Length: 352
Image: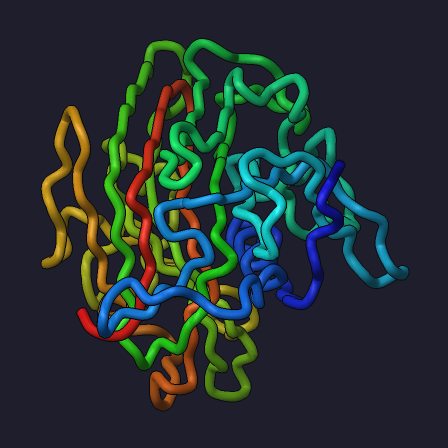
């Protein structure tokens, strides 16, 4: 039995050519599924847990499998959640899996599944035909402390996707969203987990560029100064990124992206659409060196990291801003094979 439609509280517009639809997808999944829990446990004397699923304990994993009907002529078709795995009887909203497959211009123009009513493509795969093959997501092991496993393989699988494009073409994004994470950014917010990565690139198998990145991202919400209307601000931490991946986007040099060295940075000059900043995790002062084999412990002070960046239009005070969700993902171009494993997942506020 499906768990129903993805709710539609968050309304964000998008720019078809310049900005990635997957950022809109993440915002919709995160924004519409808040209020996931009436309250969270405390991780320590001064640390309030901010995720409904610490250690992924008793977590439910739901999968986007299609789109609902539009409510009216000028309303979009919402993504729907049709399958689920794990412990799905709890009162909490689930972790949400989605796939977005964009062309080289970061949109769905000329795709086989293009629909002007779909503003966020989050089901760019066939669950029955594809899950457990070229893409997979699962919670494995002890249900009280399982390991989250996410994998993407365009080396051994080269089929034509539901988009009508080969898997190796364009930008292929598979992610897990935790929409239960929500807290004011004025307080310290920290995420911790153990991470293990297996990443392989086979450039000879694709005539264009091949590479991938493995990341953690968060959505920060605040009102920009008028006349700007954007509220969506993304920050992503790249744990692993293939050489040349950032350059493969062909982004222009943006003058308000020069405060530090970004893996990627974009914003809308008019302030109508989302702003995003991608950082190399290894370059951060709180980084730990990733082990080539075995597990690496990750700890990121999210509030501190967000407040340190030079946003185009930051809030007057950080009391006016909030963290609105968190996601873990793999993004691929060309021929790549990637596996991401996460355990010991915690998000907490208060004492550091």
